[in-house]
Length: 123
Image 1 (cartoon, rainbow, N blue to C red):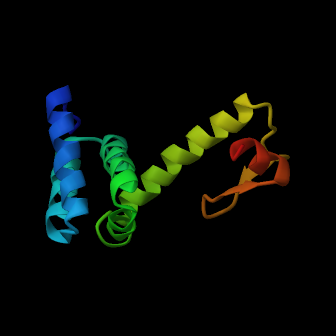
Image 2: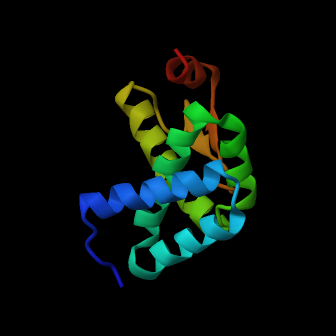
């Protein structure tokens, strides 16, 4: 099911998805995501959605919120949370913090931070 994708195709997919989010077109956004899912891994699709959302947050924060609430399927958001949690964990460990002491994850996958971890992360 996984297919190699060229950088040009990747850029085009990101651009199409960002445009669908920016114009608040649920139908097109969901169709683009479904099409990507038909030939890419869930992790790849989540990465494309994440990059599209990231570029949108700087230009149109309201469209970002709308896209997250109305267009991005739950299974993709769950993968995005997994990806970002892993990245956050690595960053906190690299900063010298201790898992289970300074930060942890609850049953829903939310990252829990003590005061030291918050200060380190948001400095």
